[in-house]
Length: 261
Image (cartoon, rainbow, N blue to C red):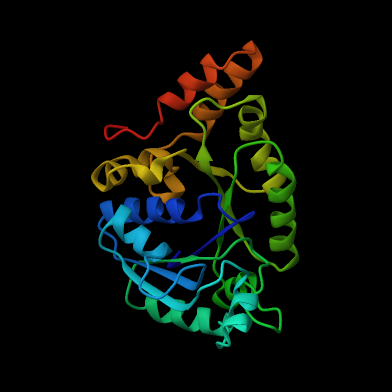
């Protein structure tokens, strides 16, 4: 798996923090890691973007940003309004492929969801994944509504012959509600792929050293971590059946953002 596409079911759901957690876990295993951000929107020249946040949290990764557009819009729209050339799927695939010859793992973090347009011809992150024959890691929210958007993302992947490596919850609440706890069991079914992690809410605000020490505890073995989906889900559902928050809180507590795991 030299190239992994990190996409999401929408925007502002934790893709960058999940990317940083995967990168930190890989770095801790001695791997050389690169992170590619095809299009950064909503950030001006000289301002820190997503790749800068990954470096801050994860440490020594190679980062590449193909284009930056100041308005917080879909990449195709932002490029058009900026009067700048868009990023194309072929550009993403070419850059990721080159990085893969020089690194053990290349993480390609998308913008928004899987089918957000990068150019006026309708090129998407899914097209780049197809060109690279790369699996897709889906980042999803925890709560009510996530099953529908995750199922839609899964259908889009399947229709294009793309493989979903799994699903990571981008922001697991400290006190999950009933929907979030039940979604742990339902997400793998609607995604047709395993649950591969749950990153605690607020993980991106941790001090970098603590983030790096904790990251592997939030991710399953398929991503290099030690997180146990079955145990995490069972603990959460135990709280759901009892109708209290305490069971879920204790279930999440064994996987919270702590330096010692």
